Length: 443
Image 1 (spheres, rainbow, N blue to C red):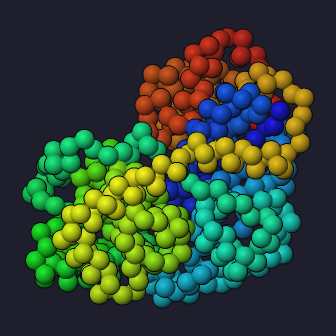
Image 2: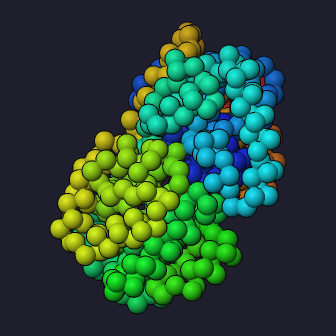
């Protein structure tokens, strides 16, 4: 049996919601696989806990699947046994100033980048494997971070096909979702953005859409996600651009389903989860012709030179005027999206953990109890409200109240449900005898 330690809070550490999503989906599918195979256990933990006590007594492998960009693994993880890290995008190293919003941002981060690159070169032996989601990312790690090719594995990310799927009635879906946002019903394109508008190429997208509107296209441009005042001000000056800010997962799904295309002509994408989600909704994609998007999108979209506003405009015009093209791209993208699933991602990650870990003759049920309690503790500590409500009882090794909350509300909560779903049966069978488990179970 293998005991896997998976820190789940790197997304909070890096202030990146996409990294949180990767952690949740990885744990969910590995948890399901654990219940099925009974050949390993996985514990959701917190990053800093990796440095507490003799972690190597309790785990055979430390797997951080969502570490993000160029930074070398943090100190708390480096002395763990069999460290595996997942990297998502090193655009700051590859493109430098171009993916920073201001010169000041770039000058502050440039020495940090140089220091981290040196760490990769000097300390790579402390990492067993690095996994990335595509060939482009692998090539960048070899070229820019000098990570040996034999230490890199390609494990594509997935998409939640239960959430992101074609709508049965696009017109009705469009009518309802636009009404919700108080927007007049009309065809539209969608852009999924982030606070770093430089990476997402938002200024060029706005300029290209402005040019396309001058040719009389009927579409609006809806932009979701966080953005700076600069982008809001620029968008306000262009007709038919609507800034929606943060939206829920359900609203995002409906916005995708009812759009005529997702337009994300980023300067750089590490993978491009929004593009895959659009394809799963049978929506064509306009994206950049460099780095990972051509590998991920394939025949499900149109590609542009992200630095060429006229090219972006041309593709917007092409897809707005040609319904047959939209339908062909949508069908091809939907078919291609079926090659991606979080279940496949988890299976490949588990195989990588097996590759570095030596199986031991541990009792599965005993360690399942330990891993479940450890996961519950980590979720409690990672959420301020849960910590406030349940930490006093958890510190006494009484998980009853937390489990009651998990079963009644946590299984529906978008932040916690992916960690609780694999443990549902175990939580339903939780009884007072677990209260006597020794303290080292949750250390």
